[in-house]
Amino acid sequence: MKKLALSDPTIGGESNWSIPNYRLLTIFLATFLAGVFTASFFNLDFFKIYLVAVIFVLIIFAINILINEFIIKMMAAAAIVFLAGFLLFSFTNTKMNNLQLPFGQTKEFSGIVASYPTVSGNSQTFFLQTSDFGQPAKIYISTSAFPAFAYGDKLKIKSAVTKPTNISNFDWVSYLKRYGTAATTTPNPQIIIVSTDSGNKFLKKLYSVRKKFEIAVQRTLPEPESSLGIGILIGSKQGFGKDLINDFAKVGITHIIALSGYNVTIIIIFLTDILLGVISRKKIFVLSIILIMGFVAMTGAASSVIRAAIITLLIAFGKTIGRRADMANLILLSAATMVAINPFVLRFDTGFQLSFLAFTGLVYFSPIVKKLFSKKFFKVWPEFIKSAVTETLSAQIFVLPLILSTFGLISIIAPVTNVLILPTVPAIMLFVFLSTIIYWIVPVIGKLAFLICYLPLKYIILVSEYFARLPVAAIQISDYWQTGIIIIYILLLAFIIFKNKKIYDPQTN
Image (cartoon, rainbow, N blue to C red; front, side, top):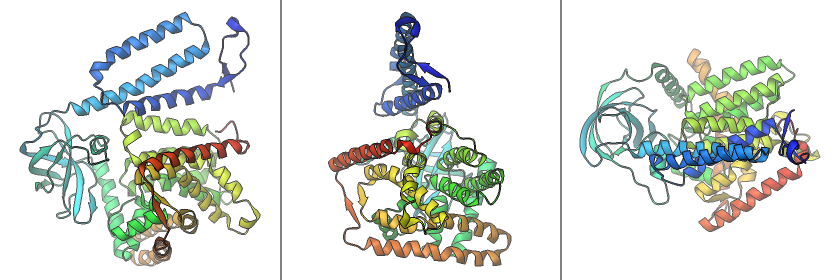
């Protein structure tokens, strides 16, 4: 592997150390993400800062010409990349802030439902794409659950157009911006359906597949098992009661129904570990593609699943074809691509953060967990169970700081409940997926196939209910303690990885 020295040997002697070429890419991707992340804390007007940015770039070029040192050139290039990320966020944010809409006025306008409506209890929410205000705009709509709307419905709405404001400690404004939205209506506006044949035909078909999937599961499994099966596979929380959601939070398994996308990665790795040696690597890769594309279709091509699918295909390619890639660059490149498309996801999309923290855990912590599970006590465990537990635990260990900072809740019992529940998750995902396909083809056999899914789903519910009732299942942590615990936890993870660095192949991570 060619390396670039950190000093020019023609100027001041030989370099004592050097940076591999592939690590330069790591540095530039990381600095781009750092630039976007930093800008997200400042509500700066792009048109007021871009001249300063141009001057800064000219100064950097001048330094590059005057100082012929590689370390200076590398730092200068990294600074420009950082600035590019900073400006990208500022430009996107300014564009959203300058959206001219009739805020505070009651208007009658039409538009097309541009998202898969989310139903929760007696309400549903979705985004409406409209051009009735002189420019394309996306508006957040919250209304009653009935009548049910669908992607592609053309609606006529009468309501006041409002500018969103933050709610307590929640940045509601930035949350909506990540969906390209800077406006809402008053709750339960007057809505009339004009037609049902608008929108992207391909996406409409995908959402139709998702709806059929949900209906198939709901018709063949009782509640709350049907909602849990749908939640595990596609991340929908529709049908979940507050008590069950609270139980999942207390025992630390809310992640199994979060559409962060990494569940699909776990199941692919899980299947790969089982099938290696049974069928060829190329056939495993083809099977992975089929499963991933099916998963994308069933979730309606949710953005979190698409990014998970991209990185999963790359990981599956390296794992099954036998060609390894630099995983740090793979993760950062995937993140940078998604952030370049939508800069708001880096800081304001918890699902995005969960996905990439989970992927990082799979790559960098699963070898350590596997080492632990190679001990004598675990020798009797079947390999597929050890694979499911190690891969999922590795992901969860890395996402714990984010869960703590987001919810302020630490589940004391989580290590036990995760070990008891996680081995069933890949199997449930696979069984629900296949049972649905069978049900669509031969409904009678499909109903019988769903019976296989019922027992593990019921098992998860019973385990959650039992452990959630324990007196010290979870504790709430205040803001100041949260920060301290998160810092200590991250330092501890870094120390463990450093102490076990010999596990890793330096060429692959």
